[in-house]
Image 1 (cartoon, one colour):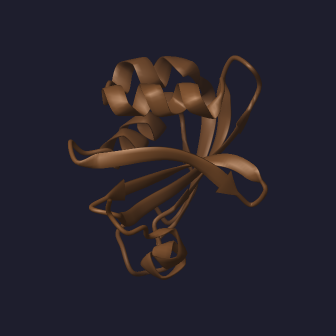
Image 2: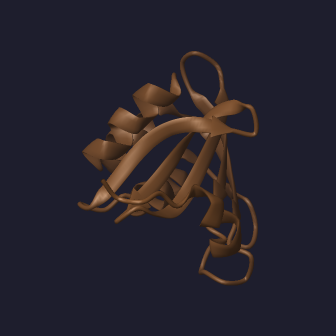
Length: 115
């Protein structure tokens, strides 16, 4: 699965479809920095991970593919303010690992002025 395909799935906000493209044993690791509510331990399983990631996308979200640590990632913004950065790993068919940054201190550099 490409990151562009992931963006399309996230924009649809369909948890079941997203879960279907995740590896059944996918692992999500999140960083809230103690400033936002996020799982403290890795979350395992396609259904649980799909619910968490889908909840990040709201009607006013703008999703873009941008370089994250030298790899393509997804930035979720609302009103120009970054709400999350998502980095995925996996084969061509399914995502096996997701890193989710929700820590507001780490997201500042991702904010963008609105057009």
